[in-house]
Length: 321
Length: 124
Image (cartoon, rainbow over all chains, first blue to last red):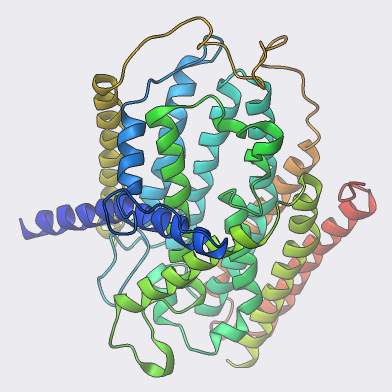
């Protein structure tokens, strides 16, 4: 009985995190972007510094008319937002936040599971792009697919490097094996992983698939109301997942600096929050990469770097054995 | 061991069910909340504000198929890294696995160089 209760509580916690943290990041993005650009951002909704802006947005999305274009592939069009969103919920369950049993559900082949499931999310954009029967959406969908193919590889290779360092593919196992000198040792891998993850989420500066000045809004052009809101939610849930994973794989998760491990899961949250801030910062700082520059960065810079990181990891690991 | 295995993935499966329910409830509730006033103009696909020309599923040149090939080859290769990564530094392996690793990386690097030489990685 207590086992069942335990599982229910864990799933509930994961679900609440999945609904709340993306909103927190969204609100932070409003505010941080505004201040970096010398303006205030939302100030009225909710009274205190516009904290309820996203709630208001949500209410607006929920009561907007849902339009499916006459020429669209109706079923696929309607299902696409769910396909884009749900993989991030599933990934969240496997990310450990604290020592011992503080994880939604420890999965043996954690790193493998996480990478595999995250790849599914892109399918949602592809479905949306194809089913909309809109030329711009189709272009956006194709760009999404090309981007996934280019950036999934460096991401997998960088993750493999950590698995080599830890000698396990379980996520809690990797954090358990962490030592502070892993940070400089795996630095290149960490950067490759983070950049490739950003590109997979189609966040600026890698937002060519949704480039608004060029192809309207890519695969999401025809969406309104709730379905559009789910696509937005999936982008922010993706940020949560990416920052959480980078924290767990490369920054030592719940280990604090200088052996200060006492705070446990607070460290994980802090590190992930700092990374989320970096994600927003990059959006404000860099202009969008052109499509060919996108491909070039992945194939000629990130993949060789990831291979070099694997070689470095292997040599250091065997030599220090 | 097997019981653990099935237990962990059934929890993941349960979460998937929760997720599907969430989406279903959201879509169902949305149906009750929103207005439905379709007009022929509204149901046109959007194309810069003018009436769309031709079909939505237009011919596009799929330039990216070479990358699709490249990706499949490299990804299938790199999947094999994971089981190897868990044992390569175990006592008794050491130097031999390291040599293997360099052979493996060599294959990938040669493949990449070949694609480069063939002009696949050039865009301008």
